[in-house]
Image (cartoon, rainbow, N blue to C red):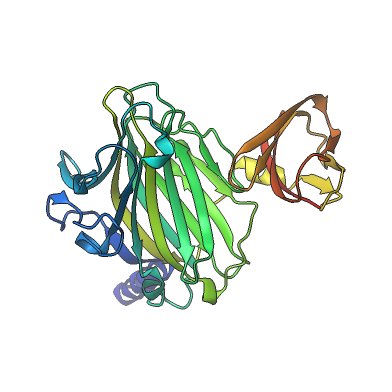
Length: 334
């Protein structure tokens, strides 16, 4: 019995190792307190191999990227932007990034072909200013864009190609964001926010193959806070793992499978219907950058003809609000 138990424990350990393999992590505890680096042009790496870039009106300082101690967490990274009031907040940008992830990915077990990266973040909100954006971007080693999403620092609305917005993330509280990239499914992306029990599969697949392996993850903020002229984000516990299991999708993702768009690609009109006779209240059209272009209201209709004649040729996301929940579908306009 003891031998059998020992073998079972060993097998469980091996299976668990295969399912989740941490390739790299950064909790900033081993980095000295103070500025991350001394180069704000992004040419020379600072502490921990992080590159920093600062631009815009107002004061730009190496201290805009700082390692600080926080009670109960150890060291964390703070990114902050200062800007004189009255200037365009788009020009008050601070960007920090890490590359070389492609080399880390090569260390994975052959069964773990899903890349998972996660991090904790804390958005400070001190005023009613809405000109504050936090942006996460990941790129492949050949420069191909893999994932891009924005979080409005005031409304907490998340916008990204292929996922819904208005996730109501907590303000002035630590949250976690997780991204899954399935290399052998045609490049499927999954976004997870466990603090609000939200998981979504992007309706846009990026067609990832080994030649487009993830190499760079960057974080950027722009804008300012009216009360103190600062906009701050705190980061902690960044982890890159190789796994072989995708997260279980929310109900909204299952609802998407029930809807059909035709013709797709469309020229002037597109028919929207579903197998379950779900009632549609409204349809919002977004471009692939996450910008909302228009909204049309409907009276609980189950079959809809949507006029897309005025849209330029390209790819769009339809956010379909139904009596059963939100559905997101991809539309191609000729």
